Structures are given as structure tokens and as C-alpha cells.
Image (tube, rainbow, N blue to C red):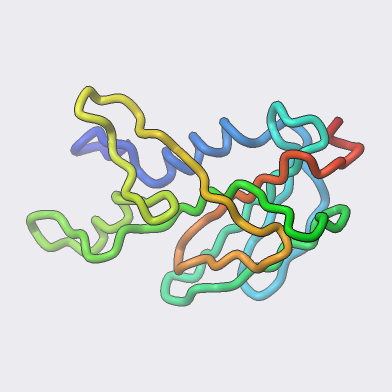
Length: 153
């Protein structure tokens, strides 16, 4: 939480998605090209998998290809939750660092509702056999609910 405004920070929303999507079992992964990758069994989806992709590069976007434990069927889609900073936003002092306190989910800025409740965290559909674009300093959760991974049943 931001210690001045007490509003949720990007880390808060990342943890919120993690807690809603990721089950207790971690899977083996490997990554290259500056993108950090993790894989877990999906929470509440027997046999499902969640790929967590993080681009730590502050100035460069990256494309990440996910090699699933078993190849997805042709045309299979998953649920994508892509978190990124909101560009062009600054506080009254023009502090560029304030961009880190605004985050978008699938290009829609996340903010508390007028009543102070958490916003909806709705995914978009994404092909499971296509690369995932990660803007600079961003993270994505790609969920394949019916992956059929034995370790996740």
C-alpha cells in the first residue's frame, strides 16, 4: 500500500491475482531472454496450469513463448491477466516515479471503486500457442484451465 495515499500499489494487485489464480504446487520451468517465468497448478482447476511471466526490463518490452507441459489443442485459448504500468501519469509534482503507483490490467487502469472496494480483475482470451507480449516492467498470468497436467489433478 502507498504509505501516503493508502491506495493499493502494483505489487498489491500482483499479489491479489497470484492469490486468486495460483495453487500450492509449483512446476519446473526454464526461461531466457530477460523474462522470468514460473509455472504453478491453477487454483480450483484440476489439471490446470498458470504461467507467470515477468519482464524486469525497465525500458524494453519482451515477447515470451510458453512451452506448455503438453501441447495445447489447435485454437485453444486461455485467460490472460496482463499487468503493466500506466504511462503518462504523474502526481501534482510531476514525479515520474509515481507511474509505479498506477497499474493497468489488460490496458484498463485498476483503481478502487467509489465505495473503496477492489476493482474487477477480468481476463482477456489469449491463444495458448502464441507469444505473450510483455511491456517494460510488467507481469502476466496466463491460465490454461484444462491442461490435463497430472501433477495438478
